[in-house]
Length: 227
Image 1 (cartoon, rainbow, N blue to C red):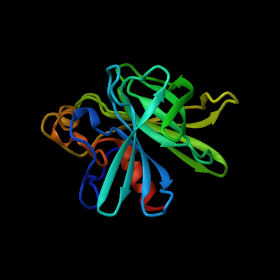
Image 2 (tube, helix red, strand yellow):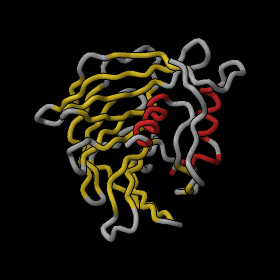
Image 3 (tube, rainbow, N blue to C red):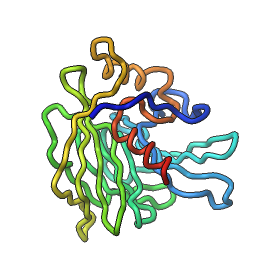
Image 4 (tube, one colour):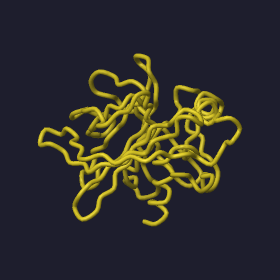
């Protein structure tokens, strides 16, 4: 699979933090604010050290954005890269860590509790996961997730599988389909991973917006523009 062209944010980027630890690695739509004047978004941060923020709520209104920290109840998870709302389950989300662990979360007010967790299926050698998305159709769920790849000799991989949840909350994946994915840029010697890391660690990291290299985020932009 080859990406067809660059992806970009619609309109101006919105600053939601002042340092690398407040960088946003994933967003999920929560709903409109109580007064109807804005929207709440759940954000995950790929921090790794004890005491660093894992989750926040971004409230977006015309001309302003505010950020409120959420408490992660229980042992802190490392390197969260993506979060997605579970269709038909208000207040419940799936968060993904880079090494391939999926956490089902229950968000109540300013606290998030891990209901259950499980590894992704079919994890390949060297996989470093960046994103996760859910699609609901005809009463069934499917999951899509992606490994970021590493230069010209190792393209990114897009995975997909049916998804259900056990009665106790654990994610249960069906048969996995996978596709290699190559972004159309950059073209100078496979520096995509290095440039992605530069972006993540550089001055833009406290802003939120879509990744330019992740196949799932490309797919989510197409899905959302058609919804």
